[in-house]
Each structure stands twice: as structure tokens, then as C-alpha cells.
Amino acid sequence: MTNINAPPAELDDVQTSRWLRFGRRVLRSRNVMAGAIILIIVTLLVALAPHISPYSPTEQFRRNRLQPADAEFILGTDNLGRDIWTRILYGGQVSLQVGIISVAIGATLGALLGLLAGYLGGHADTIIMRFIDVMMAFPGILLSLVIVAVLGRNLHNVMVAVGLSSVPVYTRVVRGSTLSVKQLDFIVAAQALGGSSWRIMTRHILPNVAAPLTVVATNGVASAIITGAALSFLGLGQQPPDPEWGLMLNEGREFIRVAAWVTTFPGMAIMITVLAINLLGDGLRDILDPRLKL
Amino acid sequence: MSKYLANRLLQTIPTVFLITVVVFLMLHLSPGDPVLVFIGDKQSTPEQREKVRQDMGLDRPLHVQYLSYMGNALRGDLGRSLQTNVPVMAQIVNRLPWTIELSFAALFIASVIGISVGIIAALYHNTIIDTLAMAFALVGISMPVYWSSLLLILFFAVRLRVLPAIGQGGIERLILPATALALVSAGSLARMVRSSMLEVLNQDFVLTARSKGITERIIVIRHVLRNALIPVVTILGLILGYTLSGAVITETIFARLGIGQKYVEAVVQKDFTVVQGMTLFIAMMYVLVNIAVDVIYAIVDPRIRYD
Image (cartoon, rainbow over all chains, first blue to last red; front, side):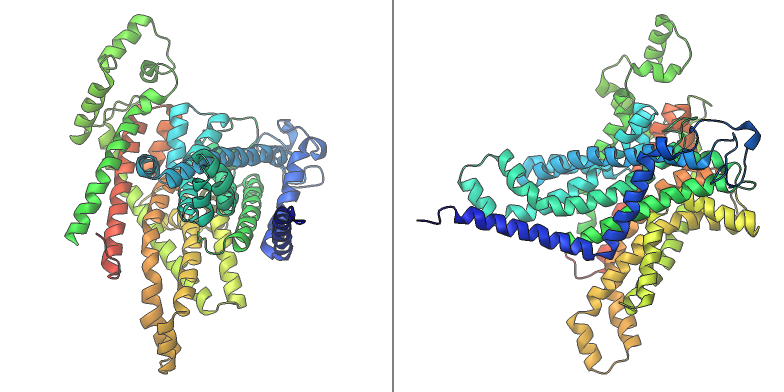
């Protein structure tokens, strides 16, 4: 009778050691560490843009147009004489924002639909998955383009469009994991105890599908950045004169023969960021969910 | 097989129906009065708007509008461009060959690169070759199409001057855009082929084959490849979908007058009928591609039973 508090204490121990194990594996994973370090540097540079950038992103130095890198402009200037380094820092704010916000939209909505479809089954499952099938009939960037075409072109709608178009990915992953978790004894026990469907879904199933969801969402940020920048590249997102990586690539395209640096540096910014996120995602997948194949 | 095909087609009907409904509703889902979509940015009086409403049949009940839109679509009439008054279907027919040429060339390049890199990585598992191959795959996946396109132009058209940067027609104008489009898919294919190969290499029948003294080369060619490449078929549809939609970007950059280039132009110019018609067309084409991929899969993998 003395150890009436023992079971919760044990549970705590199990949970702490699980986190410890996770932490140790993160520190040992070269992919996760490399990705995380690059990403932290990129985020810091971008977040501190107003403090570390030498100029304003729209400031035009008319006498220094298309100037190659030198001490004054460390990555050179574009056709309007704007400092490329400054524009990359400020443009990154937009690209990272698009990546994170659209994944937040897509993952929340997708996970909710996946939970409902997987847990409730029956008609709810059929209806939701039919809806997902329809979305998947618009491959790749097409769905985002359709949504931007319907909502109108601006940066705000780009985030919504990229987010909505990623919903099927999350729904399918969460639904699949929910279906396998649903069969386990502790869910049956929770049902027997009279837990409501909503409570069981959020309290018991969600934590158990969090691992694959995290992995998919991490790589999702990378593809959201790519798609978001693609939409700005095509002229449907960020509008000039404000900077954004995709838009900068498009603006520099015209001068690729005479001033390659105008396109090269924003392109490298996108690639380094995306590469770092993918490294992080791949590493997390190996740790959290080795069976998940993407 | 024919029963499977019939079933597969039956399953597609509700999806196709819903796609048509969604594409039809695009006009009504956009914020604001649908009439303004047809008028554009021009000034208009209420009378003019009412006239457009009646001319376009927007005053009729939704289901009547849907039926008349679909009736026309089935007869190959997707309306006319709001900008140029050219029939949308004619534009699709004119431009489709360029897009198909590009998509299939990209699919081909992606398959050649992706499958060979994947096989090599698996055969040299846990060596430096494997690491390099997977690094290549990761870089491929992380390269946005617009960035790899510009890099290829910079290197092959501007620096080396061996290939033209823009235009269409002839293999020399196809190589750069198709390669740019193929790189991402090559990366994901390489990863998939590698893990699929490793899985098969660890199976009992490979061990049996080895114990019989068969050379490693014959084991790989006769036993491993055949089994490892079957699941790859399933993502071919996904890749073709990617190359089809990625054409939106490559065609714009390389100034190829395909469907993707027109699509972007239409979105930018708010040429609604063109966007709507092309969306419907591409979605339908993609549904067909996926059915074809499923059928191919059923043919190449006799172990799978579909009921």
C-alpha cells in the first residue's frame, strides 16, 4: 500500500529515458546535426537582417548597377543597383515564412482529416479520401497554381495555396498510422472506459502518429519553400520591388549572360536552406521512423 | 485482368465526376462576383454586368450551368480565351505535343539516371560510392527546377555555348529543359531503387542462389533487379505527374510554347476560361496516366491479385 504513487513515477521514468534516448541519437546523427546547424545559421542571418545588412533591400545605387562582388557589395548588385546580400537576407524572411506557415496550414488540416478518416472509418473515411483523391489529380505545383488562380495572386494567398495543396500528403500519412494504432489494446481500453472519439483521437492517437507526422512535416517545409519561391518566380507571389528568393531568381534571369551572380546567389540560398532541411528530415526519419519510406 | 481493369475504371468515375465539379466551381469559388472575372479590370456599368451575366449564362441555376459546361466539354468545347478569343481546345491541341515531348524526355532521363545510381549505390552499400550516390540524390531532391534550369543554361548555353538556351524543336533544344526537369525525380528514384534493391538482396532466395555458386553478376541481373524494379513502377505515375506539372516552370524559362507556359501566362493575365479548361484537361490526363500505371503494375507483378 505504500507505493500507491509508484506507477505514475515509473511512467515518468520511461518517458524521461525515452527523451534522453532520442536526444542522444539526435546528437549522434550527422545528418540531423549538420542540417540543424546550417538551418540555425540561416535562420539567424535572416532574422537579424535589419541589423547585419549594410543597406536597405530596395535601396538603389544607380552608379553601381550589375556590379560584381567587391568589398562594398559583398555579393554584387542587381540591374537596379540593389545590394544582393541585403536582398537575400530580407528575401529569406519571406521564403522561410512561406515554408513554415504553409506547412502549419497543411499539416494541421491534413492531420485532422487523416485522424478523422482513419479513426472514424466508414462513410467519413470514404468522403475524406475521395476528396483527397480529387486533390491528388492535380499533380505537383499545379494545385497551388489553381488555388492562387482562384484566390488571386499575392503572398498571402501563396501561403494558403501551398498549405492547402500539401494537405493530401499529411492526410495519407496520418490516416495510415491511425489505422495501425487504432488496433492496439490501449485504444480498445480507452474506448471501453467510455472515452469520447475526440478525446481518444487527440489524447491517445495523435501522440502515437506524431513521429511520422514530424518527419513528413520537416521535409514538407523544404518543398513548401521550393513551391512558394516557384510561385514568386512565376510572378504570382511576392511582388517587386520587395525581395524574395524566387522573385530574385526571375529578375536576374534576364541578365544571366552578363551578370550571373544576380541569379546564382539567391539560387544558392534556396538550395542551401532546402538541403539543410532535407538533411534534418532524413536524419529525423532514421531516428523516429526507420520504416517510413519516402 | 479485364475484370481488374473494369473495376479500376469504375472506381475512377466518382473521382472524375468530383474533379469536373471542382473545376467548374473554380469560377464561383473565387472571391467576388463571377461576372467581374469575365469583364476583367475594365470599368463597367450595372447594365453591362447584367448583360455579361446573361450572355455567359451565369443567371441560370448552378446545376444547369454545370451540365451545359460539361456538355460542351465532352464535345471538345472548353470555351474561348478571354484575351485572344481563340478556342481553348485549339490551344491545348497545338501545344500538347511540346509538353508531352518534354515530359517523356524528362521521365526517360530521370529513369536512366535514377535507376542506375540507385543500383550502383545498393551494390556498393556502405562504401564511399554509396555515400556519394546518396549525396547526389539528396542534392537532386533539393534542387528547385527553376534553379537547375538556370544553372544548366548558365553552364551549357552561356559558358560552353554547346546547347541553345531557349526555344523548341530538335533534340538539342530538348536536352537542357528535360534534364532540369529530370533531376529531382532522378534523386527520389535513386533513393527508392537503392532501398528496394537492398531489401531484395537480403532475401532468402538470394542467399539460396549464392549458395548454389551462381556468380554475383547473374544473381543481380536475373534475380535481384527483376524483383527490385517492380515497386519502382508505382512511382512512375507520380514522376510523370511531376514532370507534367513541372513543365509549367521549365517551359516558361526555356520559352517553349507548351501547355505549361500557356497556363502560367493565363493565370497571370487572369484568362479564366484558359485556366479552367487547361486545369480540367491536365487533371483528366493525369487520371488516365495513373490508370495506365496501375495496369502496367498489375501486368509486371503477377504476384499481386486484385479483386
